[in-house]
Length: 274
Image 1: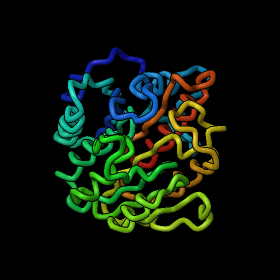
Image 2: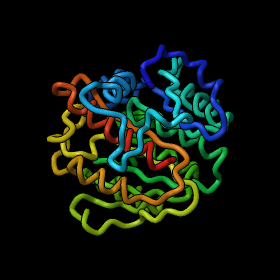
Image 3: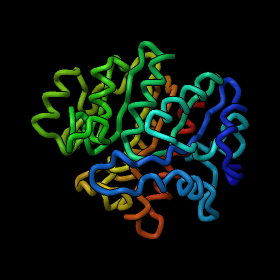
Image 4: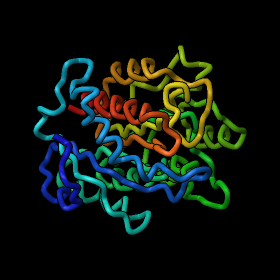
């Protein structure tokens, strides 16, 4: 289903209600290692891999979903071309599902989403809060997207899951923006998942313990198992209007394991927007 030549103009062929799976190969705002720009096509290759199948765990065959469209990797002339890509998808009445790329892509994505959804909420899976005001002199760093989103009021509510790298500055930022932060040490008492209205879901693969996802730039021990995050995803009952999966770094992967994990996460998330 997804094994097709990549042609960004396919975005213009979308129809209302389509799920637009689009690659955003961008990692210029990575603070430690480059590599996530290589991820989108490799995630799609993993979805297509003969070692697995197209079924979700609830027996939804994603290859039989006619309104699921792989739009290919978008050619990005600059950072703000990401916003224009999402604008184009939303103009067609489709749901953008972006494959990154580093986590900085979420800021221009949500900026575009906020034009359509005035009361947008965000559910954010990550080891990191990504709430720094600035990192290494870069306010667009992949460590900063949710600070930019919240200060510009592009979302009314932000709930984070899996956080285990909190700093005093980020704690102050979370308090400032009214963020619901679920740390790993408090993982058995998750708060703020019953988000009402339209929800944007952002999934950073390093929410997983590096034992399950070694192919990420920032190895942060003490994270979720793949099974645990699948259980959380499968329990969600939300009006999801846009998604991203980010921070897969193939340069650090081991035998494609993290690529297959990303493919599994993508399949289960697709089911949540049907």
